[in-house]
Image (cartoon, rainbow, N blue to C red):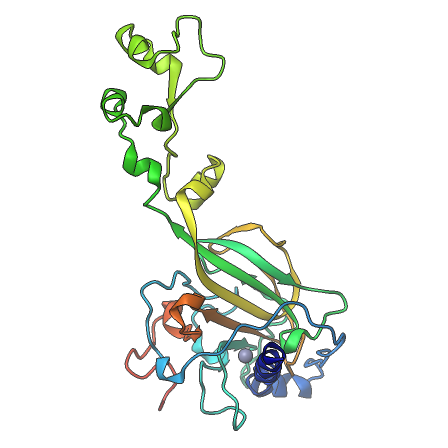
Length: 311
Ligand SMILES: [Zn+2]
C-alpha cells in the first residue's frame, strides 16, 4: 500500500512536469497550426518516473555527475530554447519542475520547431536502462515516450590491475602468476606448460598472455577490444529523456557521448514539442534529481544564481 501511494505521488509530480514549460513555445506554433497536441494517446504506464530532488540544489555541481553536454542537436547552447529550468519558480503552484525543458525557438524574426530534432546521449559511456517507447505512445506517468540511460565511468580499481604487474618474473615471485597470465590457446610445441621453464627457454611471449584487461579508457576503443565491462563500471547516475517521438536504441545497448538515441516530440503530458531532460543522482546519495544546467558546459551560466535571470 505504501508503495502504491509512493507511486501515485511520483505520478502526480510527473503529470505536471512539462505542461507549463511547453506552453510558452507551443503558443507561437499553435497560431501557425504547427503546435499539434497529440500528447495523450495510450494511458498505459511502463516503468517508473525518476524522483524529484531539492530546490536547495539549484546550480549545484556534483563532481561525480558523469553527464555533460547539450542533450539535443538543436540550437546548441542557446539558453533561449529552455522553457523551464530546474525548480523554476514560474511553474504550476504547488508543483516543482525536476528537469530542464528544451523547446522550440520562438521569435518574430523567424521560429524553429524542435519537433524531430535528434536527442543525444550525454554520458561518455552509457548503458540504456529503459526504453519506454510505444506506438501509439503510452502515457507513462506523463513521461510519454522516454529513455533512461545509466552513465558508466572508468573503473581504475580492476583487481587484476592491482595484483598483477607486466613482468612475469615479478608475478611468479608474488604467487599471483596464474591469475595474471594464462597459456596462449593452441600454443606452439616449444611451450612446456611451465612458465618458469618457458621463461628460461626464451619462449614465454609465445606461450603465455596477460589476463589483465588492456584498458585505454576511451570507450569506443575499449568496446572494440571487448573489455568495456572490465574497464568501466556503472555509476547509478541516470539521465531520463522524456516526451520523445521514437527511440533509436534498445534496452541494454551501449551508447557513447553524442550518439543519437531518439527524436523530440510531444508525447505524454506535454502541450508542445520539447525534451524534458532530467539527471538523477545514484540512490545511495539520497539526492534525487539534480540541476542539469551546469552540466551543459555552455557559456552564459551564472554560477552563483543558476542560469535563470533574477533567480
Ligand atoms: Zn519538463
